[in-house]
Every structure is written in C-alpha cells, then in structure tokens.
Image (cartoon, rainbow, N blue to C red; front, side):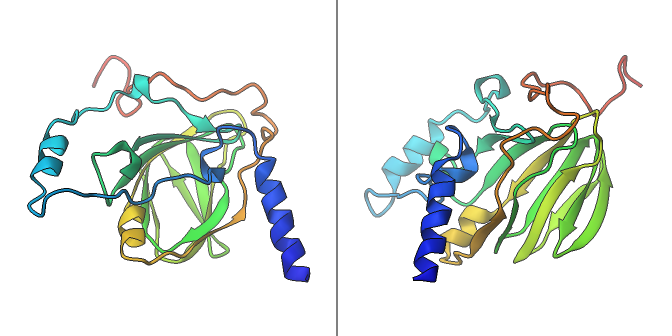
Length: 202
C-alpha cells in the first residue's frame, strides 16, 4: 500500500514536468531495432547513405533552466547503436539532475568552472579538464559560478550497456524547473563559438 502511493506520487511528479524535458520522456529510444536480410545489405546501404556531419545549428537545446542538453548522436537518430554524444550547458549557479547508471561517461569541460559530486565526494573542474563518471556511480554536475555558464561535451556508451541488458539507471533528484539564483535571465547559447582558443589566435 505504501509502495503503491510512492510509485503513484513519483508518476504524478513526472507528469508535471514541463513539455520537452528530455530526461522525463517516456518514449526515449535507447536501442533501435535492426532487421532485414541475414547479410544486412539493406542496413549497410542505409547507414552509408546517412549524413556524416550533424550541424549544431539544426539541433536545439532541451531541458533547462539550470541544465540544458543538445543531443548530437544517439540511437534514435539511426546512425549509431551503442554510442551517445551530447553537449551540456549549465546556467549560472546551475546543476544537473542527481542520478546513477551502470555505464561510464566522460565530460570534457569546454568552458567555465564547476564541480562534481560522485557518491558524496566532491571533485572540482575547469575548462580543459575531463571529468570521469565511473560505473554505478551516483553523481551530479554543478556550475560553481553564479554569473557565468559552463559547458561540457559528454561521451558515453549507455546504449551499449542497455544493449547488453545491463539496465540499471535511476534518477535520485530531477532537474530543477526554476533557475538558480543568478541565472534567472540565462538562456542556452545556441550559437557555437570557438571557446578553446584566444580571440585573434595565438
């Protein structure tokens, strides 16, 4: 009885999430079906016809208002099966959801300063660093600045783990639906900039 109420409460909370929230979607495709002749000739022809460059201008950020995501490649796109690449943008004072999953992930920090909390241990990072999330780690990502955003390119093999039926993943704390103090007027930077080199060159 108590468990039923908890599940019901969790469902109603998820249903109240704003439309377009990627991490609360119920229809996400983690692994896509492949069918056809045994030699997969049709599948290979389809893959070879797929575009090999995805334009950032054609992929919009989702979620927010503290943590935004731009998903460049994932199984639903039809070109990969075991690979997921996305860009995370943390608004001033922003943080991600707190969650855990069986797969590893690597966060290459493009700009900003911040920190991770992995299994209740804090790890600081800045632009140029790589933050590693190990298997089965409960973690959360934080922007340490209340005035400037931070960005990370995320590479993970979650689809491969799910493909192998290693299904553990759980959200402990959902992404916040209100901006953090200092980030009230922030919107994700849709335009790509060269953030890895000084203006005017070296």
